[in-house]
Image (cartoon, rainbow, N blue to C red; front, side):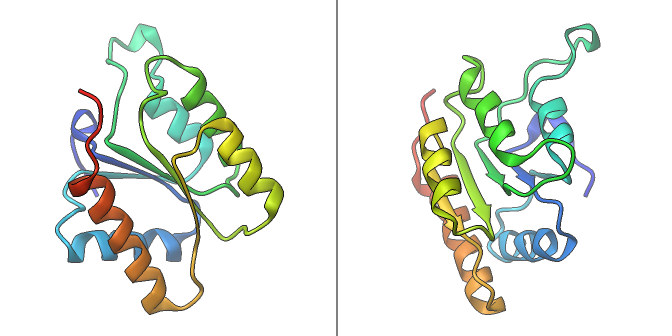
Length: 146
């Protein structure tokens, strides 16, 4: 998907191609995927959110970040840590969407400031329904600070 990176509303950080495609399908079905940027690892996510000062590009602030925890290069907890530690990005809602139901991942995510933690359902229909509901909530119902 090619979009103007300055117009991203949803930053999807997901290394699994099947889960990424399913997430995009659920968002597209509900007309929520017009401005989604899908990156495949933590480094790409951080490069998008925190471009090098010399690039002249402004800091990007999507309406929500959908973040997997088990990522190559830089894991999701470190991405979350960086987002919530920086004053420019700490107000961006971050939803962890992961296969991990481990207590330590859940506790650590909330300690770092995650806004929501969702364990990916294994069932196809339940996965689509979960992504649809979280997309509708974060893109339509939620009122972010202005």
